[in-house]
Length: 141
Image 1 (cartoon, rainbow, N blue to C red):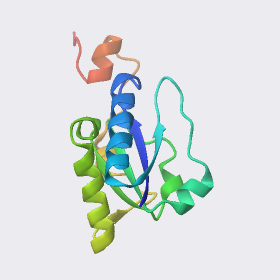
Image 2: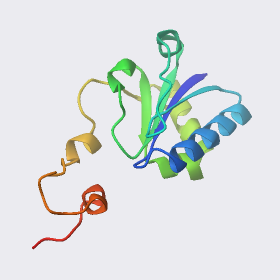
Image 3: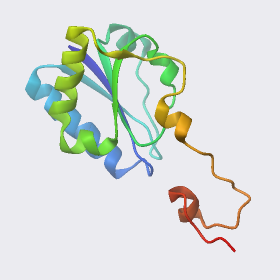
């Protein structure tokens, strides 16, 4: 199968690339064609339209919302935290392939995912520090 993987973490650096490498190696070992799009502070090289059209499914290994998610509308997908892709990439790929094969895979829609709906925008006018805003904590006077 041809599987597209989007990886992205909070910082967009270390975990993003660890996950992409793990998924790529696991896909090769399992005999699947794996293409990776990393999203983060180091930039992104988005998939071309033909790759998306030809893909059998998508794995979103992300801790933040996927940029350009609407490009994958109608494709079977699996979404997990980035740590799952780092520690168990073979299992993610196997689970997606199984769900595609047995017809139980969810399809990408333009509606926000449960994770995106739960995310609360940070109030930038507050007096909390940058890291506190990033992790949802901080001083409250």
